[in-house]
Image (cartoon, rainbow, N blue to C red; front, side):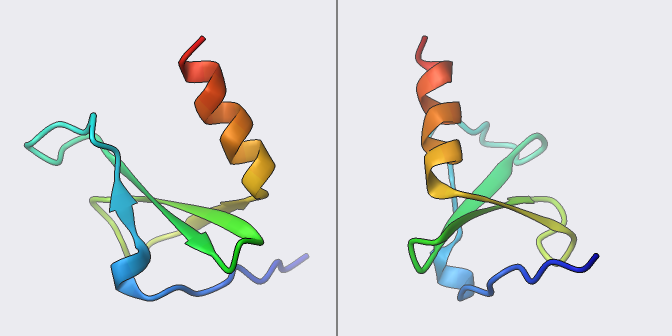
Length: 66
């Protein structure tokens, strides 16, 4: 089964403000048309991406603030 992951401009991607300065262990996130949150490895921006519903991402981030 193939799932289409939306594309976003390169300028849409951002890293957490908690990311280390050496860029060795980081993910980047982008919001695609409000329908999906995309996640990728900052060390391999052309690699695979994960797409999750916005509410799932919001729930994940909220759980980190526990």
